[in-house]
Length: 92
Image (cartoon, rainbow, N blue to C red; front, top):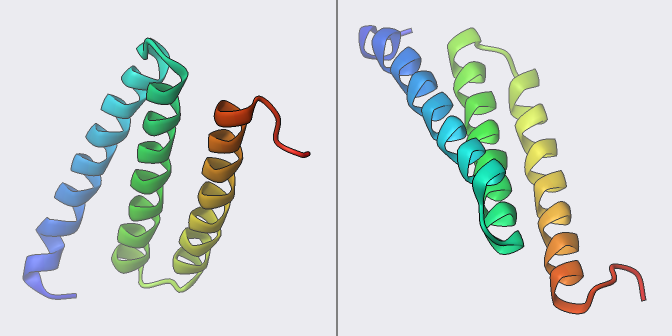
C-alpha cells in the first residue's frame, strides 16, 4: 500500500462513519416518511462505501462482493418503499 493510502483510508472511514451518524439522526428524527427513506438510502450508500474502503484497506475481494450485494438490496428496498409511499401497497 502506498504511503498516501496509509493515512487516507482511515480518514475516509471516519468521514463515512460521520456521514452514517448524520443520516441516522435524520432517520430517527425525520418529520416525514420521505425524509426517513432518503436517510436510509444515504446510510445504504455510506455502508457500501465503507465496504469498498475496507476492501482496499485489507486487500480482500470479499468486501467488494458484499458491497455489490448491499447495492442490489438497497436498490430493491428503495423501489419497494417508493412504491409503498406512492400507492400504499407493494404487491398489486
